[in-house]
Length: 248
Image 1: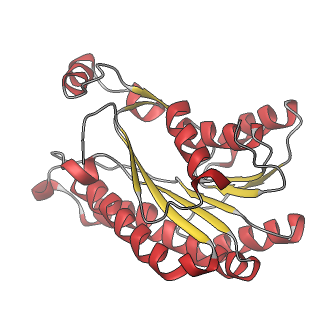
Image 2: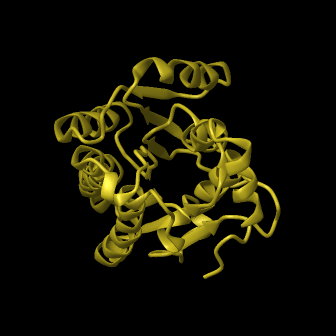
C-alpha cells in the first residue's frame, strides 16, 4: 500500500463524491487531513468517518472563492501540523445551459469556483511547499475539458483552465521538488450524476469502451498515486480515468 505517513493534505470539496473518497484514501494511507466544503453540515459525516477510523482531521467551512478564508485555512493547517505536503483541488460546481441561454452570473460563478478557487488554494500553499522543498498538487479536471460537451461551456472552460494551470505551475515549481498534476475523470457515479435520467445515463455508457461508469474510489486511487513518492518523476501530466472514453 502507498504510504502517506507523516504527510499533511488539504482536500477541497471533501464532503462527498470524489472528494470524500480521496479524503478516506489519503487518511487510510496515513496522512493527516484538512477537508473543506462550502456547506459545513455536509462535512460532519466525513469527519465522523475519519474519527471513527482513528484518523486526524481538520474541518474547514470554506468557500474557495474567498481569498481570506483560503489563507486562514492554510494558516490553521500550518499552525496545527507545521506543514502542508498535498493539495487536492477538487471543489467544483456546474450550472449547465446552452451558451446562447447561459446567464452571465452562471458563467462567472462556475469559473470563479472551479478555476479561481484552485488558483487561490495553490497560491496559498506554495510558499510552504517551496520552503520545505516538497509538495504534491493534484487538480481535478474532467474528460469533457478534452472532448467538449453540449451545454457545459462554463464548466468545460473552467476544467480546461485547470489543465493549463496545472502545466504552468508544474513548470514554475518543479525545481523545488513540487509536482503538479491533474486527473481528468470520465463519467463517475457520484451524487452529481445520481439525478440524471436513465436515458442520459445510457447515452453516457454508450460512449465508454469499458461499458460502465467509474467509481469515486477509482479516481481517489489515482490521486493517491500522484500524491505518493512513487510518482515523484511525474509532473505536468493529465491522468485520464475515464474507461477509455477519451484516449489521448
